Image (tube, rainbow, N blue to C red; front, side, top):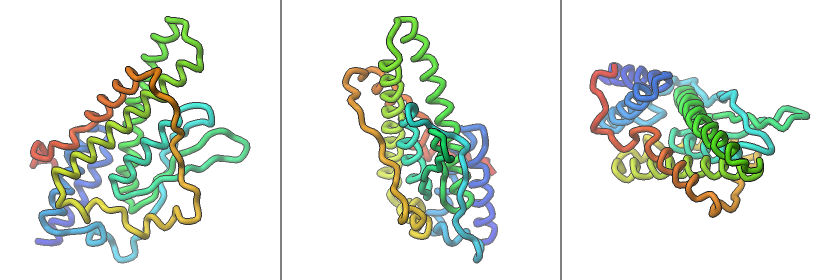
Length: 228
């Protein structure tokens, strides 16, 4: 019986990497629900020789643009039992986002992050188009885009906070394991560059609203029983 439940949880976590965001979210939430119900922690699902791995998202921000990515990666990794860091190839200004955690967690982080970045960039494309038609300078357009991105990841963070409050029994299930955090000890962790967002509050508010409803994080009761 226990082996069957563990196998089902692992299959659900694998579905958490689905390119279909609704299916992925349902699967992750169902897996968490089962882990709580049967009192399984992350370690209970690991092979005896399994160790944390790194997963390259293949997504980067540059020295000049898209700094909101570090905030987004931080929110997603912290709420999915992982950490993140960046790799900057020599003589470039590209900072690639890397997730570190146990395999299923790290792959889920990378999948959620890729989808979130795609959603944010889609909105930023529309914002840029309108502002260019209004003949706004590039510096103002970039500030507006960073503001939207900040709003998005802060909205998503609040959605996770609501989820945690409503399901406090998830405590141990969603804790980042100490052995996963160890990789950051010799590193300087990414700091989100805070800028003045007051001049672009409407973009912050838009990003916050859309980040908060990015997934149905707080609707565990809607999880489909037939995901697996």
